Length: 274
Length: 277
Image 1 (tube, chains in turn cyan, blue):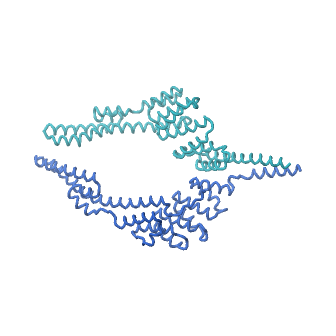
Image 2: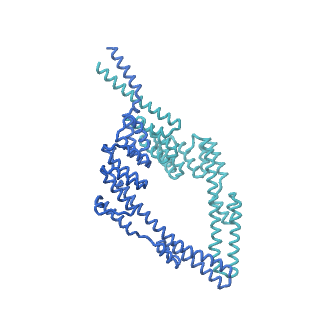
Image 3: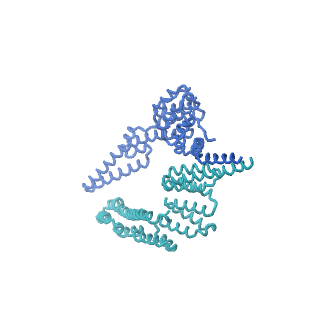
């Protein structure tokens, strides 16, 4: 009889300890689903601490990382995804961790890192079945690099029409920095006109015109020293300023278009975004 | 027999079902200690505070104070360190950590008061911190006997600090102003070499342009360049004086930064506590 009781107590204590863990898991999850990320992290940490069998450790690390990500604590999120990676058992879990780390890199615009992670995943035969998903995130890396053409091509290939159309629209709306610079090199102010900064373009053109006139005037009156000083300190300054302005305006405008597009993306494609 | 077994099973189930074991005081304490050792001080504080009313002890209060100190909530840290009873074995440690607390927020009068009001405790660590703070902030230098409170390596550092504070390598703003009669020389004196060279070249260039224009009867341009040259010249004098003040301020800041870096390395001379072994 005593043996039966002993077995009963052993089994039931195991079951109840598991029950406690599940209760704790539900408790932590309830905070997570109510977007109370601070308390969710505390409770997942409690779960990790008491989970001696490490049954929920991968899940908890993963959830903590997500909480930190939603709270925009990307460094902490990165650390916890890395910890989850050390506890991952299946190729799916390993892949998920790596992709999540890649997504963090995309959000932070560390696109070189993101490309490197995707390259590694692509080369690894363990993840052959996730080829489409890897391509999907590659497209997002290009998107965050503002290389909308490549992003569109990949989305097209994956048959994600809406995302492809979205990228195409951005491609049309955005400005070429190179074109702006070339236009301003040919005629000061033209690059600014191309971007839509008409007043600035006109100002740049007039300042350059004036300084060129003064420089030529000085040289034609054989005031060589005045000519050199004017060309160096006045005309060159306005000419270089005009080029820098054209480049800066193009970059700023593209940045603005990109940032505005993010709002739309996060409301329309919430499942598929980094 | 069957009834007995049935009763045991039922009571066992009820006992387990009612007991949310991870939130019992013992487990909260264990979890809080875990968070504390993981340097997750904010969460550790919250867990310790759940125990404050039921199982508060000096160790627990000290840990809350210490956690607050680590997350730079100095007022709360001070409150908890003060709560430790005089009879407690942690009292002198708490006073020393409170000294550190005041040192970090640069409240030197409270640092002195803390030392004075707790003179019955073993406060060698606080004393060292107080001595360094006096050197840094009040230029009050310790006696030879007081210097021997420090270890050999620390003594070297303190002696070096005393020399730097007693004989500071300051630059005189007056000398800088007088030297800048030659454009740029004042800035070179304050070791601001690039600014010195720029001042010299710009003042020289505009003076030459003014002279050249007057010589060629371009009077209007001559006046413009003279105006610019005068501006650069006066700016050079003013800039040299400011540069000397800035040099002196940087010198003081450098000493403070070096001292704080050294102290941080040495845990501010306060004995380290290790609750996590």
